[in-house]
Amino acid sequence: MVVIGAKGHAIEILDVLHYNKFEGKLSFFDNVSPDKPMDPINKYMLIRTEEELKQEFKADPNFILGTGNPRLRKKLSDFCQGIGGELFSLISNQAYISPLGVSLEPGLNIMHGVKIQPMVSIGEGSLINAGTIIHHQSVIGSFCEIGPGCMITGNVRIGNNSFLGTGVKVLPGITIGENVVIAGGTVVTRDIPSNVMIAGVPGVEKKKLP
Ligand SMILES: CC(C)(COP(=O)(O)OP(=O)(O)OC[C@H]1O[C@@H](n2cnc3c(N)ncnc32)[C@H](O)[C@@H]1OP(=O)(O)O)[C@@H](O)C(=O)NCCC(=O)NCCS
Image (cartoon, rainbow, N blue to C red; front, side):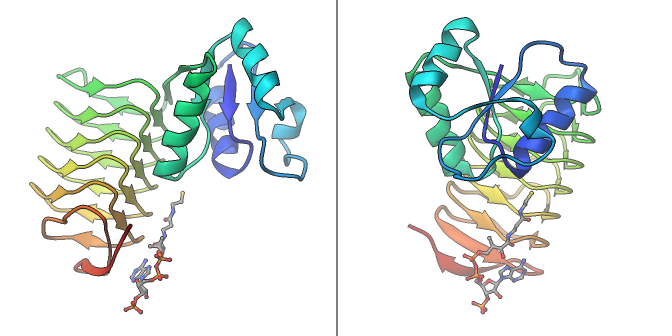
């Protein structure tokens, strides 16, 4: 198993793997940071090049996305799958996933303390960070990042590649577009179109995004 990334979020991924008692071979991939990885990632094999990663995937194609940032997660996922990797979901044993009609696509990171309530669906490659609660029938798109401690109430829809910062609250039935950035602490009280950044309580549009 290779974790793609070797910084902050990768440490949290390692913590979930430990908690879940993962016992296979584990390595980390980082081809951008010049510095050595920090403790405790420095105890594991570090893969630095595309060629080494390709070789590693021949032995075990599974990889876990170990970074935040929706666009980066999508880019790294495409890159790894293009050289023989298979996107793997990591779900903390300390998360609650309702047995009632939940649909989870591959490549998720569902971190400690998350609660996924009935009939929720989550698209490929999304990160649901620690302590977030997603209530009934909400739909999260692919490659979203939902920050720690968010409260997504019932029947909410969030488009692909959207980012919700720490502690965002989304009121029931709200639709959020694609490629949206919602600042930490925002309370979303109205529908949000695609490609905007919003912030505040209640959340207001601060700028358009490319
Ligand atoms: C939204 C965020 C990414 C900044 O984006 P940005 O494009 O750099 O935004 P800027 O700093 O240019 O701010 C734009 C406006 O939004 C406001 N703003 C930014 N973050 C805000 C927040 N959390 N709450 C309220 N207003 C906020 C700024 O004051 C500014 O307002 P103004 O135009 O009226 O002066 C950042 O503020 C944020 O909230 N990050 C969340 C980080 C996080 O929780 N990550 C999870 C890690 S696990």
